[in-house]
Length: 451
Image (spheres, rainbow, N blue to C red):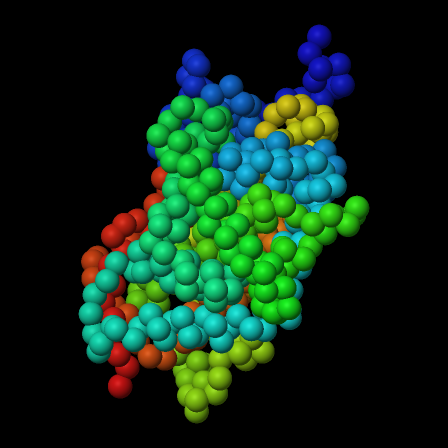
């Protein structure tokens, strides 16, 4: 007798089209966002698919997503689901650390993004934008995906790791960081230790990054009396319960993890924001008027002033709805789950799709249409349908910094320049080849200085 039969529970419905040996891996790899939407359409609230032997249950809809993000926390493990990050962040860091050490590391990471630090960041980002546009001239054309990758790397480094790190950042650092990013391909979530060139480059980059970051740490320890007010300072001063400090390896891992939170997702969202500003002139005019009224007399761009831009916030929220930075969130089941009479067995993976959730027409009418006037996600049901940064006790630690970074960039940029599409409006589409969403390349826009 099966375990489900013994307990009187049913099993989740299985997605069709499974192939011997690989399960649904081929369909998942082609377009995993569309695959997940098809799973929900076929099976409903729960849908089980096979990732090359790893059985995964997709949980769809606000009720199931709330259970995933909050209600089932004690029976689900993030660490087991995200072993693909271990070679990137490093051994003994976050998802490879014992539970109590992981808890302390994550608390230190949250402390690094505390209000006192955040107050300094808006002005830093505005300066980075000013430096960025200084060579633009009155008009031109660029691939803005590449440009925003560079800009958000600079802003994240400057804000989180300090000016000393930012201005010593070389092309080597950018290449190393790029190699780490490429190491988080879909296959890494099946086996991150396969003998593949992309993983070999990832491991080499992680070793070299630790050498570079350890050099900065050594310089700071030699100047112990100087205050920096950034994330790296917080990492270096953080301690475990026994009073011991983080090692260079652990500090490097938290640096990388925080950079991912502050840059990895923001570059794609920033590029999509620029595209939608060019593609949605009626909403752009409203946002511009708001920014000109607030900053038109030369008022300094501050963390406090960025709380007074509801139209820009609503615009960015709609960008995040249509183009959520992380398409898929996962957990590993560590204890059997009875979800509304259905057994989800220990050892399986459960997942939710932000991309599919944000296209649920029940909560987002005409979901493929960009509408910056949509009602805010302030009801319980809609709150768990709109999940660009997850939710519950494990909501993305970098979400506040990411939003502040996006608001700072466009509050500084939009009053100076206007943007126009180079290619047909419908040619700007999501690149779904990786786990982090960004526009397809090239993402070309024309810019022109405002008179």
